[in-house]
Length: 337
Image (cartoon, rainbow, N blue to C red; front, side, top):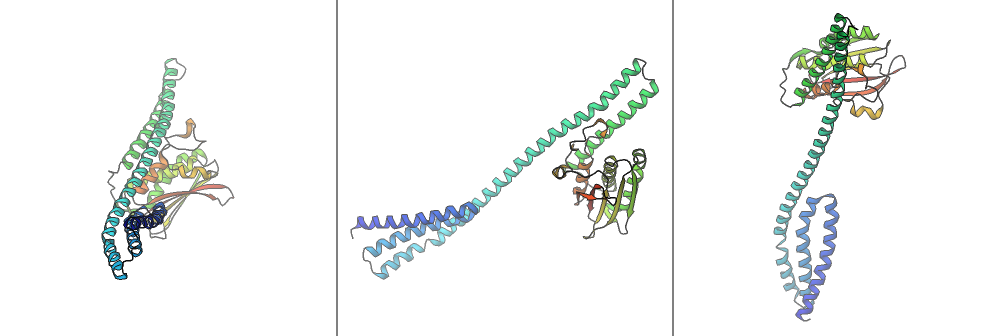
């Protein structure tokens, strides 16, 4: 065989082996890019070795000489593995960084979307008490409303706006990442009892019954102020969404993982399944909650979630069937002991 024919044979065999190897690299790369990067240099070595060995045999080199050539080529395999490993590590790092960048971009997009939504909702809610203050002031100036009655209404709207601002500041502090909890052994059952007592007048006015049940061993190392705020929001939310004649039940008990679990069950007639994932979003109150009398800026449940996460716990919600056959919701706040 002439040297030119030998070169042609080597090129053909190398191309065939290289094509098969490239197909394998592409197939592996679709699922594991790093493994494909390791495999690619080995395919190059294999295709060159196959071409040279086929050409050597065709040129009637002896078995020993052909084997020697093959072994010399195979000696490059460790180098190919080293190069492939370096490429694999780099490919994996690039893929990880790209995935993280995409996730961060998506989080930023969601945060910005929620921020705009929150600003719109809070602005809407703040306009309501401001409009009420203006109307009361004008009515007082025109002599339509007695000054004492106008002052009472203005003070009530002022407290409402103050509560909204307090919620905004609390949520900002909890989500800033700089909050330092003052953990100390605290009976969470006592905090739940305080929340029930504070919600009593509002519940009486709404015709809602309050019941509480505290098991033993509900002491946990928590920030009492923040947990009290969360429990107050949970109970207040339950009272607000329970129809007159309904009952809000609060139970504090030890959880299976030796943590403390607070159950707050209301008579809200249930939450649509498609709304459950958004129930703890700041400012979100569902499609039927855009009423002037709903109170607050829709931040209470978001504050509850932030308090739970700051303590390393969690809060969950689900629909339940009540003892009287009706439907309600149950919030479960879990705090590590």
